[in-house]
Image (cartoon, rainbow, N blue to C red; front, side, top):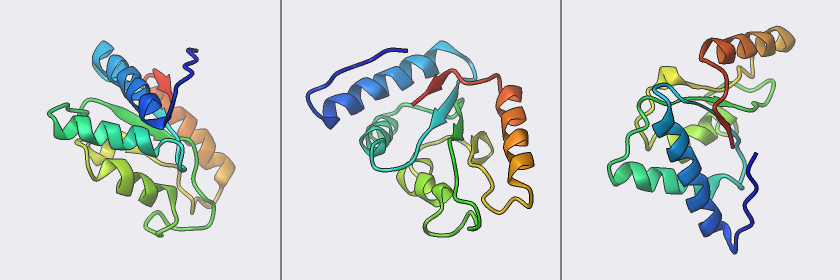
Length: 129
């Protein structure tokens, strides 16, 4: 684990994006674990900016940390919707390569176990943000 103390969120976003870029460049199929909420928004904006400048994320696979139980993926408050709005709709990771837990799973414990299996099958996490 690396700890960075920064002056502001803009500096943090650049350092975090550099770390994502180093991870993405260092492996043919990097796997990232991503959070939601307000904290990562500057990072996601910086990744979108870099994509618009020509960086491709098409070889990256992502897994999100969580989802609300009991709401559909398309719900405006779902974490899937959040990630699409702030990142996935703006970069070139194919939809089949980004994963958000199923909030409507009939058995959340089994769904979580299968999510772990999918993460392991993807090669495990290379970077957790």
